[in-house]
Amino acid sequence: MRESNWQKSSYSGASDNCVELRAANEMVELRESDEGHLTLRTTPTTFAALLHALKAGEFDHHA
Image (tube, rainbow, N blue to C red; front, top):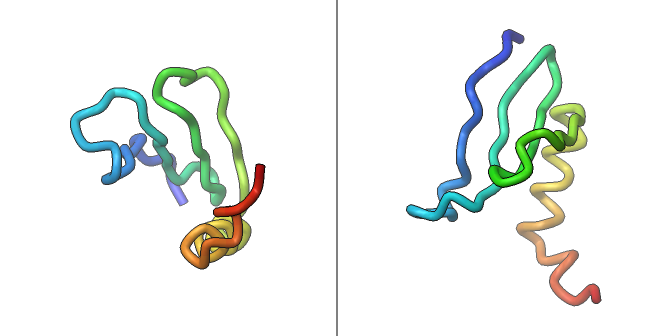
């Protein structure tokens, strides 16, 4: 997997403060656009599990 360009979340609309992601070296990288120097790297499998949990609402009631 080659390194791809950062992609902005579609939920961000016209806002510059958003979550961005890209594929890089067989990993998935995430960052906040306003904190571009901080990057979270994970495997595609772990990222898919995170998305599934988010969509299922598993984090909706955590303080």
